[in-house]
Figure 1 (cartoon, rainbow, N blue to C red):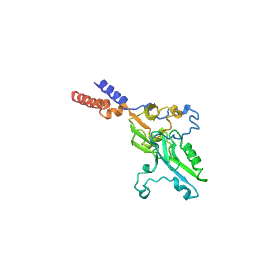
Figure 2: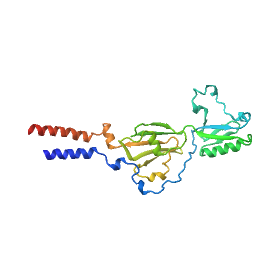
Figure 3: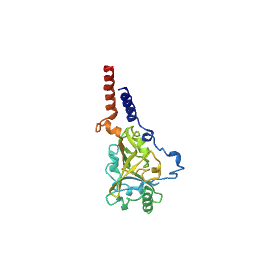
Figure 4: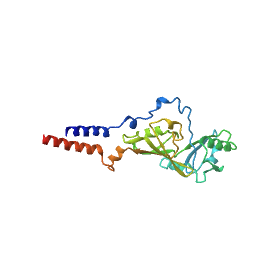
Length: 251
């Protein structure tokens, strides 16, 4: 009976403890040399994006024909900011005052800024153009401490940074199986990233795009906590208590 009791205690410790390989990020970090050095990212405008486009000049009068009138200017404090932006339609175009229909989808912010500046320079000599993506958001779900939708103001976020915004992975999140869901040409693409390794530093999924969804799969321990699978450590603990009571009674 004593041998059985010791065996059960050992099994309880083995089952309930997590290993280093299940917890530690970037376990091969010592083996890389400047991996990902020089990486850069600039988001590409997509259909259904909402753009904030501002133009400025020394002469405000020359800008008036090109200012977009939304009817919300008098109520700007309470208005939805996205309603004041330029929606990229299903054809990938925006409608700009005076200039008409312009192709925006597939261009970076810098490319669209250059296009607008070239066309506006025909009318305004010292025009300055700035383009921002107003709906740059990523969604983080699953085994993280603070799941939710996060707006990225500077339009650049890496996968580790997004997980940091969500409060990092919980103890029950699987570091070696993080799912990134991305829309490409209207179709959903799914890839899995192993955060215990560094090879994803040079992958297309190191930097997240607008509207990416990150899902952290729960570990077996997390699934047990949800009640879908019996909690083995809890069962062993209960059995140990019963066995101890039997030993004490029969001594």
